[in-house]
Length: 454
Image (cartoon, rainbow, N blue to C red; front, side):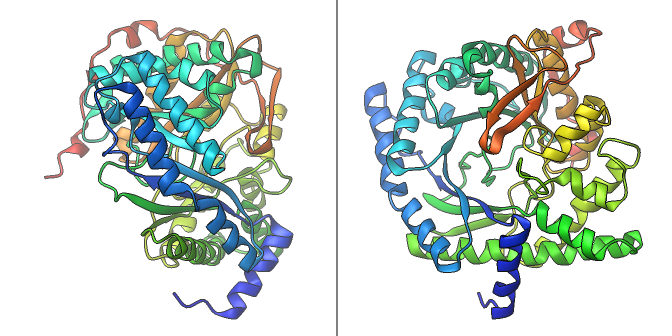
């Protein structure tokens, strides 16, 4: 693609002043050729395939970084859902596959690898169940492995039996990693309408319809959007605000297209998509909440917050679509509480609570993300929160998710500190009235009328 020199100069200004970066270059790797009846053979095949395909990922990404002086914050990989590769194995053997993934990720020098995953929206096989039951041990005995489970879709409905199972697994993962602030749950996400080309951890997995290897890029830029809103947006009407954000998203996405194309060419793998999500960090000013406040709400969470987020999300998508050959992944605006300093402050001030966050997920990219809750929250309450998110995604034909962290030993008003991109999470209040009877009904929620599209 042809990039004008002035576009590069403008982007450099965004990098040095406004926290712009390429958030992740994620190498998707198919493991469909790695299955075997013997676990040791299968685990070795998994390790070897990841190392073979990923051995030059960090080197080539660094080469593009150095060429333009712009950081690629994370180099990551995702693989075919492991429940498929390990279908014939039990949960102890599944853990061996997670450990093979972890060892391979260390060998090739990446910080996270996604794909310890299962897709159970239509029902669960013995392999799916083994993987889900193994998640607490797998995440407690690895450092780089991330796990995801798709529990619902617009076409299939919601698998309530597996929602309940995953609520229990979240509790067990919290307990298994209690010594580290229940950090295992920060590497575990449940989805409705999960996409196959998501480059962002913890939900990344390589779709079964994907090629042998592919490069997907996730960009960021909340700080850039906040800066242009602060500088140019004060006296604009709401349509002009949307146009300003759209133009800014176009410029950000052009950088992602450039970087992805070059890394892809250097590795000799096809270039998949650019995910144009605004992904915040704990850095001051690099916050989606602060953008909403620049748009006109006093604090993120007050009346009008969902409206402002809807405008932001739509404008980001429109701008990004014009700037890249293939836009995919999740694309829009993320609202992870612990990873967004503005969100953290809003929670601490009482402006933002779980109910408002749920409303915001109706119009954002994903769902309830990096939400720390009291460690004694019952599994049924966690299942109810997940069910609410899945219902939003199912009815609205969008991806929704929940990454909930019941932090062992913590209560409302406490905080858990993870550092780095995971940030600091205030413990949020969960409604204490019961939903046990509803969740215990089990079964499958029927697909909505929107599913009948043929």
